Length: 497
Image (tube, rainbow, N blue to C red; front, side, top):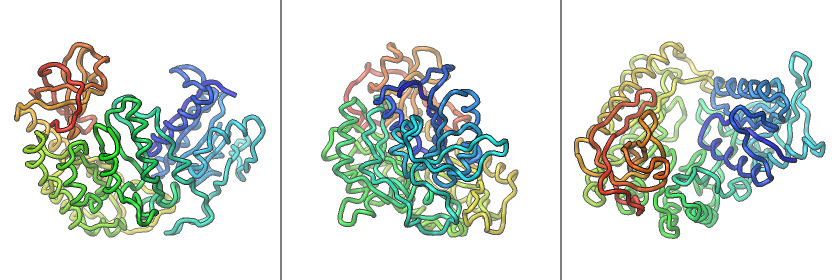
C-alpha cells in the first residue's frame, strides 16, 4: 500500500523530530508527500497535550483535516494520543490512534490495520452523532489517574529502536539529533512525564553514528535535542553524562558546529560553559528552561533548581563574553534565550513586579513568554491564587516588551562594533527583496545581506559586516543587516562572531 501523505505537527521540537522520522519511513515505503491542495490518502496528526488549549488544538486539527481529506486514513498520534487515546479516538474523522509508546511502529501498525491485519483495541466511547469511534492501536490505554510516578505497566520504546538516524531532518544546514526522551521531573503544571515516559538516553556510540551520518549528508550544524536533555545518561550509570557526550562528539566527529537544546539553569555547568570557549565548534548559544525567576513560583512549580542556580548560570554565561571575543572574535557574547511562564497560580502582582525587576537585572538576550494555561489532571490546577486570563495576557505583553528591547539592543551593539561576522546562510531573507539571504552567526544572531546567487548560497559561509539592526516584533526577535565582505567562504564557521 502506498500513496500520498500529510503530517500535521503540533507542539515541541521532539514532535518535529518524530514527524520527520515518520516522513522518512513513509518515503522508504514508497509514499510521497501530498502537494499543497492535493488530496492525501494518509493524514497523521502528531498531537500536543501540554495544556488544555494544546489538546483542543490537536482535536480541531484532526477534525479539520478529516473534512479536508474525506477519503484519507486519519491517524492521531503524539502526546494527546498517549494520555487520552479514547478521547482522541472519538474525534470526528479519526480512524486510528497510536500513542507515543508505539510511535516507532506507527507506519507498520497503521498500514497493517488499514489492510485488515491489525489487532486494534476499539475505543469504548463513540462520538455523539453515532459515527464509529476510531480504533486504538498498540498498547496505549487511558490513565485512570495521574500520579507523581511513572506507570510501571507501560512499555516505552528503547532509544535504540525509537531514535532512528535523522537522515531527512533539517535540510543541509542544520539537523536535530535526538539523544534523550522522557522526563522524571513531574512539575506541577506538566503532563509530559505521562505522555513521554521516564528518561531514556541513546547510547553514546549510537549518537556518534548519527552525527557522522548527518555530516555525511552535508549538514553543517547539529542541535542535540530531547524532552529533558540535561537528564542524558541518568539511566546509564557509569556512562557519559551530557557534558561528556558533547566532548566525545567534538573529539570523534568532523561536525562543524554543535548546538545544545533547552537546559535547566543548573544543567549549564561551569564545565559546559568553559567548553564554549575552549572548543569553538560548540556554539556560544544557550536556551534556558527558566519558567520563573521568583523563588515562590519555582517552588510552586516544583522545579529542580532555585534562584541561586538561575543567577549563577546566567552570570556565568555572561562572563564568557570577553573570553569569546579575545580567543575567537565572537562579538556580543553568548546568545541566551529563556522560557518564562507568567500568570502561574500564586503569582500576585507583587511577585510579578519582583520577577520583572529580577529579569531586568539578569543578563540574557531573548525571552519566550507564555501565559500559564491549565492542563487537566495536573496539581497546578488545584493551587490557590489563580490569575485571570486577561491579566496573564497583560503580563505577557510586559515581558515581551522587555525582551524585544533587549534583543534589539544586543543586535545594535554588534552593528555598532562594525566588525565582520561569519554567517552560515540558511536561505532567502524573509520580507526582503530577491537577492537577499539570511543566516545565523555562531552565537545565533540573525543576519541578512544582499549577495549574488540567492538560493544557491544556502549552507555556505559568508563574512558579513553588519551596518544596522532592525526589530522583528512579530517574531519577538531582531535582525542585523550587513554587506558581504570578501566573498563567500566555504570553510568552517568556528571562531566566527
